[in-house]
Length: 84
Image 1 (tube, rainbow, N blue to C red):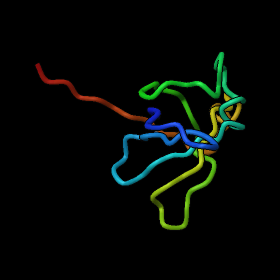
Image 2: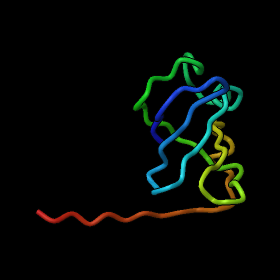
Image 3: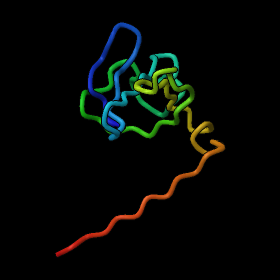
Image 4: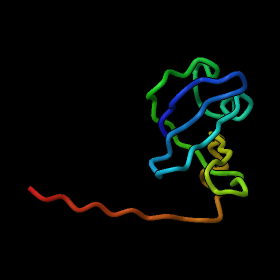
């Protein structure tokens, strides 16, 4: 995800999915491997795992905990096709 903004209790993230935003709390950011988890800059790309989806499906809570990223029950593969 890419940090879109810093809020009172965490960060709003652009997840690359239209109409869906992520929220990374400062508490969950501290679980990541950041030097200053409460001072991440807008635009920074970070690895996160979705922990909870809202009922309306437009926002989700995420964590930067590396163990959550490696033990997530869902896997995803993405393939890219380039044309030159």
